[in-house]
Amino acid sequence: MNDRIRRKVRNFQQVLHAAYPTVTDPRLTKLGRRALRSVASWRYATGIYDFPIELKVINKLFPIAVPRSKDSDA
Image (cartoon, rainbow, N blue to C red; front, side, top):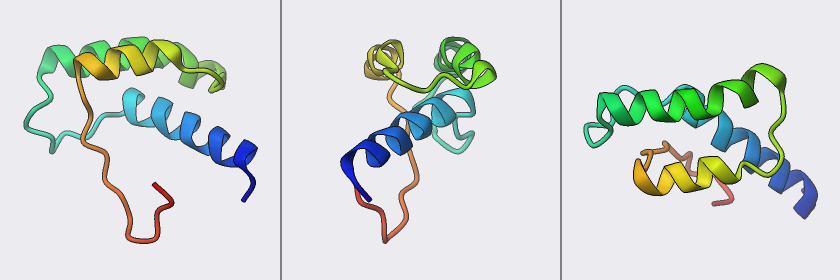
């Protein structure tokens, strides 16, 4: 994969994980879950995944535990 496609996939993953945060993360409060969903919902609904700057900011306040697979390029 080239860098452009990797960036698109990472941006999509960030929007997806914020729109549907995992319920198994004990550190994420109800407030954090609502904040992530509300910020990401318009992006997910419209399909605009490029430059999710507001998600990066809110992810600093409410970090998400993102499951990774063994073959992930993280």
